[in-house]
Amino acid sequence: MSEPHPVLGLDDTVHQRIRLGILALLRSGVAMEFGVLREQLRLTDGNLNRHLKVLEDAALISARRSTGGGRPKTWITITESGRGAFDAELAALRALIATAEQT
Figure 1 (cartoon, helix red, strand yellow):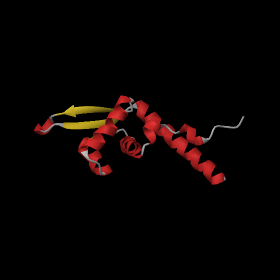
Figure 2 (cartoon, rainbow, N blue to C red):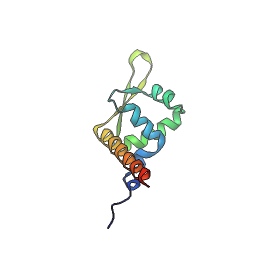
Figure 3 (spheres, rainbow, N blue to C red):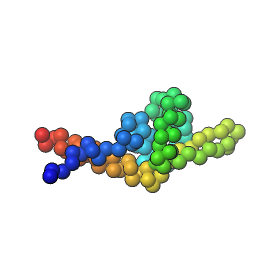
Figure 4 (cartoon, rainbow, N blue to C red):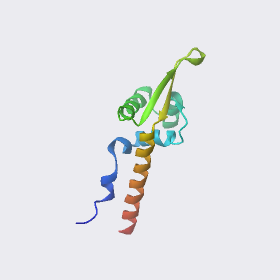
């Protein structure tokens, strides 16, 4: 039996382009404020919230709320599981590209 095609290694939760972008921005491990993520990815509050909820429900990110400076802020951090899922997605994408380049 042949090896499974690399596309089967892609994770639907991570692979969606906005969620992949969120994890890429967070990959360094530095917490990012909600507004910074929103601006970087050019999203509305509602759209970003929806994608963050998917990632948080999958335990790929964590959100912390703070009220420093009088205005509430939400800080988003990648989890160890999130870093692992992002790295696995990169490996799957590399394998997919390598396969495509061989044909």
